[in-house]
Image 1 (cartoon, helix red, strand yellow):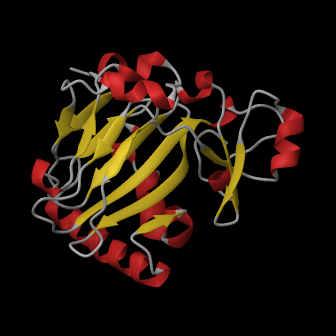
Image 2 (cartoon, rainbow, N blue to C red):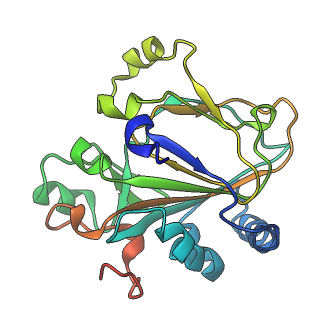
Length: 234
């Protein structure tokens, strides 16, 4: 049964085989080594293999029609890089162009920022409500190894003020434990966090964000869709 609309998250088990995940692990290590980081943004531009994964039929089968990948990140927690993540929503998107151009096109977008040379902005909640994130797990991700924690149903509350988040974390959180090859679907508006691993080992995750291609305001375009001629929505 699909639980994403009601709960804001859903775990689909065994989407990819052990052999396939092995290839993605090797590529993830290569990408992280070249980037010199355990949090590698713009993953699809750095790896043809992960770009192909983002367009794979098995991932598209989990999504509404006309959705395309619009942002990609590799997370690679290791015993030496074992950080906690506080409760938050994913409120920004990566766009092409400059903050000034975007502001002129859509006043409801903002605030604007630049990360690693790429413009990011908070879009209207109505756009975030349409987006879906897919997290492909490359390693065993247990409660003890920093699995994602979520507050079911919190995605229906819109953009939550920072000083209100603590009131929602009342012991009702769910730990999304996953095995290699599992895919976690979630709304970017879902409150989520992760703890420091108690028994730290590798915890590699390919994080892909999807949205309807034409969901952005006129004059704004997705940063990562440039050159995506193979997208079914183009």
